[in-house]
Length: 120
Length: 108
Image 1 (cartoon, chains in turn blue, red):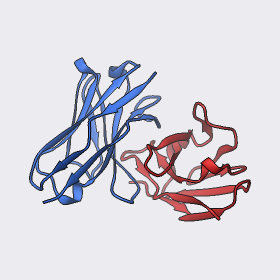
Image 2 (cartoon, chains in turn orange, blue; image 1 turned 180 degrees about the horizontal axis):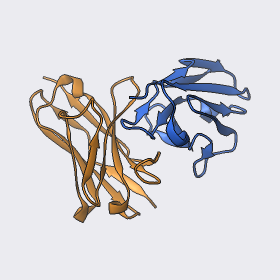
Image 3 (cartoon, one colour; image 1 turned 180 degrees about the vertical axis):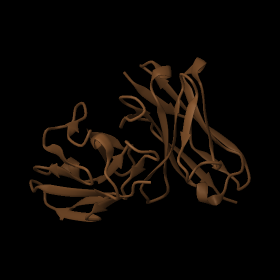
């Protein structure tokens, strides 16, 4: 069974750093693209970027380029998104999702989400 | 960037009725790389339709997708109580991948 297990909720202060994770299981982690999606409170879905763990190819949405860093450790089938200096506006639910059918694929499996709260 | 505009923002219907949701793209979506997702409160989005008209695994046949180019439609033939949710369209043929703002289907 395909599963994407995300790390737990985080409460941080503005200016702090953070790295959240998404561990894939039940499929070949290195042969599927992984996406990160933001959902701010009460709002819609926003695509942040995608990564191919097999060769570390990464593509960012222009809205998130320079704001986050996407990475993966294929030895433990885990993808990450990290912030070097959080802002209150980073408060949101963050989902990872697997792309079916290659880089031009829909998101067929989703993680349960990681809630990030940034507040002083 | 392809902007997806969904309409209406909210659809108020009764169980058993037909729901028709629209997704319009600011430019043509290549190869009909258009998907629909369902999200219930407090839950993860679920893939319903991909390639504009193909149902994802396990999705009931009351859900159907159609369209091409810039105009796409999600139809729910007869609403079940569990279908009341927010629906998002997404294009994945042109980077950056983008989502529509969502249509909420609520009980009338």
